[in-house]
Image 1 (cartoon, rainbow, N blue to C red):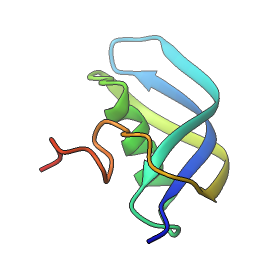
Image 2 (tube, helix red, strand yellow):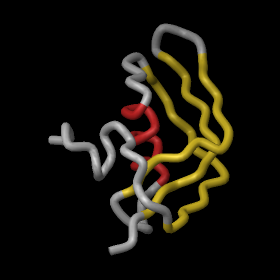
Image 3 (cartoon, one colour):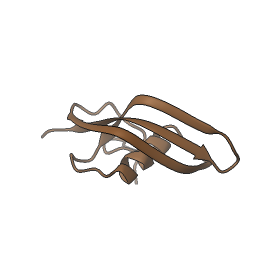
Image 4 (tube, rainbow, N blue to C red):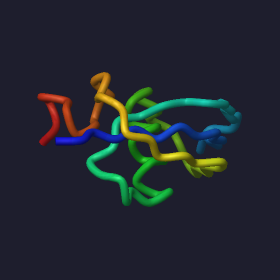
Length: 80
């Protein structure tokens, strides 16, 4: 069964001020049709960004690649 990951750039702003930017980040996806909102949620969850306010993802590419164990992702055994 194929597995998918997203490669993307992102910017997160925080409720207590500040921001975080990343380029070329990767997260595991449940399938090839993941939305930008879902990718943003997986990004924030994978880094435990508790005070995240807004998340913008850009330059998203979805590729077929084995999961690497993104925290909160489809292969995370702790996922509820």
